[in-house]
Amino acid sequence: MCTAAVVALSHVWIVRWDMTDDKHYSLSEASKTLLKQTDAPIEVTLLLDGDLNAGFRRLKKAAEETVEELAVYSDLKVIKDTKALKDSLGLQPIVIHEREQNGKTAQTTVYPYAIMRYKGKRAVVTLLKNTRGLSGEENLNASIEQLEFAFMEALHLLQQTETPRVAILEGHGEPDEAHTYDLMAALSKYYQIDRGQLGTDVHMLDAYKAVIIVNPQTTFTDAERFIIDQYVMRGGAVLWAINGVRFSEDILQKEGFTPIVPLELGLTDLLFRYGIRVNPALVQDVQCLPIPVNVSSDPQQPNLQPMPWTYAPLLLTSQGSPITRNLGQVMSTFVSPLDAVGGDDGIEKRILLATSTASRVTATPGEVDLNDMNPDMATFKYEYVPIAVSLEGAFASAYAHRMIPEGIESDEAIRKSGVNTRQVVIGSGSVLLNEIQKGAPLPMGYDRYSGMQFSNRDFIVNALLWLTDSEGLISLREKSVVLRLLNDRRAHNERLKVQLVSTITPVAILALIGGLVWIIRKKKYEK
Image (cartoon, rainbow, N blue to C red):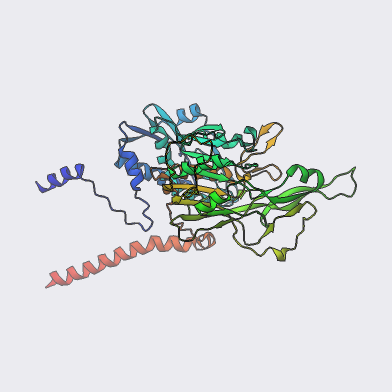
């Protein structure tokens, strides 16, 4: 009777304890809430299958465990038909080359994807994150950390009935659509992207979840600054990608040098009020991209050699933010340093991107000279100069003690303080831009000279997801799984010893226990 009651109770009252240190088997409250909002079955097909090595078997097991955990809080079932899906979806597999113990090379084809279906819609979940600069084990561990976020992001997109809108501001000499093509392509998966200029209506930005300001070159009017400020006060999110200096890459290419002067955009007071300052200076870094330089003395026979270009730093990403966690370096050119200001203003500030441990700052007015390819390394004495910062909190208005600018259409009083919202400030527009090669746009973060792909695209997408995240899903990227690696050399050298110990020890213990039991029983029953 009691057993039947316990079984019946277990069907309506599910109790689960996660006793792992990193809470590996626990879903966040944001995930549980999203799953409970589903009102139709969810189908998941895991394509990660076949003859996998140990690392990918671990990833597969983690993906299966994540799906099992999702099924506890929703009507979810796993579909086994994988071959037809691979053929119909056109997913690109990855080929793994491994060296076996006999010296031969083995080749394995892996599909590191899952397909999620909900209400007739379908989303592809990428299970493997391949970050440049990380080892294979570190990439697999990072992929396991991001599994919950990957599945929840896909489900969130499938649940959306209306696509949120994001605005890219124009009218101040910003880059054209060709140089922001990949930015719009990357964000179009999540948002409807509109481009346009600010007018006179103070509420014209209210329909947008976020506003992006990319590399403006001319001054914002007082009315435009007021519209942006009041948008932030009403809870609007802004991504600022602005330089602190004015320079000309065209003059640099033609003349070999360009003067640099402060870039007056009229935004200094606004950003200062929000807790950040973009300094009128340029950062140089020893950790940088190479550029081709002609080292030949004969103009008829050029000899192009790669030389380090310190004005194109490779920026380090912070592991303390969900925007940049597990991301590789971010490519940039001509970046300005940031300073946090405001003291104890209640605004949470986190550094997202920074330079390396060998940097220097070139103040304005000054110049950039292509002949200065071998600067004095002793002058690179700055460490971790902030280049991108996230801001979160209730911001104070820059117009709290000012009049409404002339020409603004508004019958409301100025909002002097805002509701809780988020902003991201980047000291360079180059992080968001793509280059053009033979008339075709290249991906963000792709260096055509070295052929290397950096993490600019993921950084910008994560930044917008963080800015517009009202469900708390982006916080899932902060989930940490402890990487416990074996010492490969020791494991190989002591393989026989470990095998013998692990095989003989359990048998010996059982034999010892059996012998003791036999002796005890013999003495007991002999009497």
